[in-house]
Length: 310
Image (cartoon, rainbow, N blue to C red; front, side, top):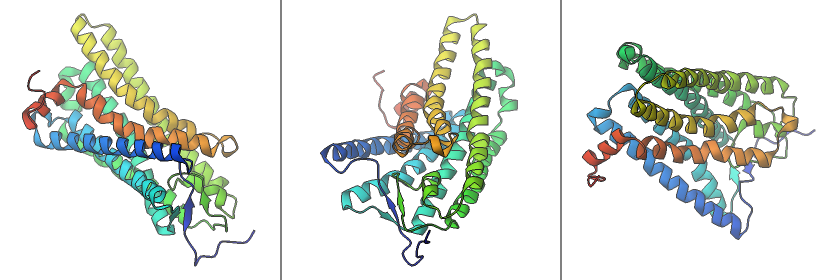
């Protein structure tokens, strides 16, 4: 098979929607979701930075989650919208590598961060008297830095490998962003080694944290079941349900997509599943953690002067 001429190094993103009125309507829906998610996550970061009452490990972790979601949205959505509205589908070789790097960094870092948030809730509910010891600000900072650093290192390894694969003349990526597994069918070489790397990375950064979250919430639910106070049980169940909602929307599509062998994967199905962890989850996070949280609502009252009638 003839290799792709390196003087013409653009990729083609086939996109998410069909080129018709229905696709255009769905695109504007995505733009609306993008704006809502951007405003919501920016507001969460602003509130947590400004309100001293939210300067606790739980909300520091939440501010990082909002930051990661903002970068998630900015990495994939603007380019997709520009390509559709401009009638272009191209993305440069370097631009594809940059997009892939930031996407994978956010994916891995957020997976680790959600596990840290589950541990925070486990300590707060199951060991409240020792919370300041097990979840000090120093340990919280280490968790955050570890999530970013490990996610970046893993992403860099995958991106460098992807940029050194010899690609053939067919450069059409059947996706709406540069997802490395979607680029593999374009390679002029056997990529089974890289597919094994994807399996290992998914297990380390998504599957194992998900199992850790499951164990944490299993112990939380058992502790909640033993509570005598009905109000305490209700509050704890509410906290658990909100976090588990985010976890389900994030981990399930990701793990299902990346742990399947290539022969069982469908480009159309992969694109639909990607919508959950790249678009819907960043929109849901500020709603779940903000509008359903009395402390965040109180911060909105103090900072923005809204909800004051309540």
